[in-house]
Length: 282
Image 1: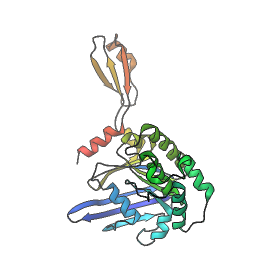
Image 2: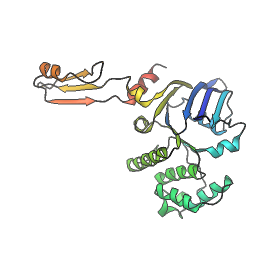
Image 3: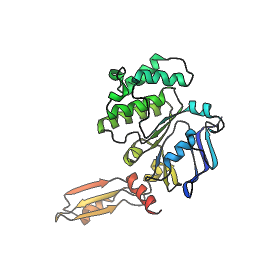
Image 4: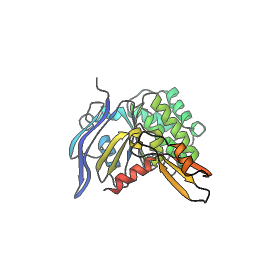
């Protein structure tokens, strides 16, 4: 049995003269957390819409647990939960009603224990009888995630889930996503907050102008840049020294060169720097 949860093989999509997707190719293994990064207009949402069946691709292959979403739409929709970038739900339903109805739409039996667990994990229990239109922006974001998980999908797709939310809510969502990941959920995240991709993702795909420029583990991408030691001399001059070829810094040599340095700071590589290098090339 294949270990691949999602497969994109030379996927293309054009909107008139605009080439939104150009031979996008990468696979996501079961249980992986993958971040899909790219500037506005990179084709990230178009790729998700092709996966969800909202947009018909022009070429290539997409497989969800081995099935084509265009040929087996119901089967693949059951396997995937998608948190859209826009807030999409009926404002007159309560969170509890919405999750019950969501399960019903998929032909699933009621599961009050699971529904209430979801509401609790996303800090919506005390608001479960409040109409959605009365919820705060952050609560509506959480409700979108609960709605996407109501039918117990094996794959979760999040399109900018933390856009416009406060730091406290963002951190609680990070913790929840990490719990889902530990339980075996396959997660694909698109985000403009590159630090959250670095924190959460096992692998990163960088997409620019419809092309996937790189798809690597987060660790290997970060290894493309070296750590830097920032030294402040006695005179107040700031000097930077790159780590050696084999890693680390020759502190004995640094102490000899700068005997009266009064401040040392190690600067770790950032995914944002690597992302900017790739996007600058296009």
